[in-house]
Image (cartoon, rainbow, N blue to C red; front, top):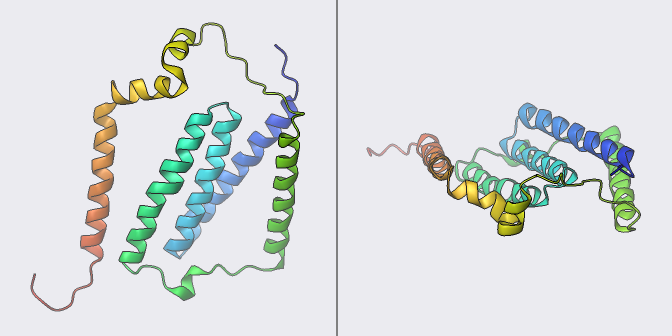
Length: 183
């Protein structure tokens, strides 16, 4: 089947790719940890949009819920607990050009939402005939992703959760202020 709107999807793929790269660059160049965490959230949203464009809606939603939601809330909690962000450092100074660019990107995103919601854009993705069709019919979209995660990769999944917990506990212990008492 021929794609009806390949330019539309190609443009958006590169747009969200550039947004993800620019946000990641802003993430690593911020002095304020709170501002850096918020740039990382923006990166996660752009990556989620890329997943949706690749017709992986479930992974896109999980990207937002797990990474941009839960993990970033934990990171911000640790930043606030350790008192790493001061009010004077949190605000990013922006000039007129940054404001104009933000307004322009907002207008472009609203226009894209209006085009997509009008129903004139067809889905470009056509599943190949032997692309685990039996598994998709048997387990569904969520089951197809969840089955390997909780069967073959369960150990790696659980080790990652323990690693995140240890990292947060270590950050709290290392960042705790000394009050002069022995302990």
